[in-house]
Structure formats: structure tokens, C-alpha cells
Amino acid sequence: MTWWADLLVALAAGLVVTWLGLVAVLLAVRPSRAVIGQAARLLPDLVRLLTRLARDPQISRGVRIRLWLLLGYLASPIDVVPDFIPVLGFADDAIVVVAVLRSVARSAGREPLRRHWPGTTDGLAVVERLAGLSERSTKGGSS
Image (tube, rainbow, N blue to C red; front, side, top):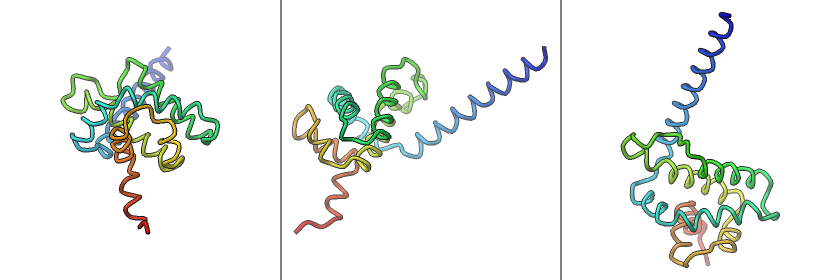
């Protein structure tokens, strides 16, 4: 019977360590409040964009899997950071979306984002800035 207790303690400890690691990652990639606000206003269009990208067969399987996992996380009532924690509690969805969006943009590029974007041109400019694409385009040096 003691092995059950040991197993439960080990599982609980593993969950706590994993949660602390995720919170640390969120704190490390946390964008500014202005970026979080922009992402929150664009959330409906972002969800449609992410769904369209996840269904696009031209995008690599690894990227599509990340997108489906993100969509599952957004649909889940369970948050990495509970809502009662100030600032991060309400911003964790936006932070996770921005982190995955940056990863997807690095892998898939700008063209699929533009092709699947359902919103306005100004909204797309914000999404490209959130994804880190606007900085990359100015660093590349256009002729």
C-alpha cells in the first residue's frame, strides 16, 4: 500500500516541477503589456488564423501539430497560470499564442500567415510584429 503513496507523491512533485517550469518559461518570453493588449484584441482573428494554418497541408506536420496543441490549450478551461494571479493570470493565453505564433512564423514564413489571415491589413501588421516578422524584414535589407 505504501507504493501507492510514493507514486502519488512522485506524481504530485512532478506536476509541481512541470508547472513551475512552464511559469518560468512564460515569464521569460513575456512580451510587453502593449503587445499582450494587441494580441488580446486580435484573439478571434488569431484563432481563425491558427485553425486555417493547422489545416493547411503545405505547412509541415510538426508546425501543424504545434498549432493543434495550441488550439486545444485555448479551448481548455485549465490555464497554465490561474486567473487569480495578477497580470500573468489573465495574460497567459496571449503569451502562449505569441510564443507559438513566433515559432510557427519562423518555420512556415510570412506567406502562409498572409494567405490565411481573416482580418484587416492593420491586424495583419500587428500579427507580423507579434510573430517577429516585421523586425526580420527590416534586418534583411530590401533593395
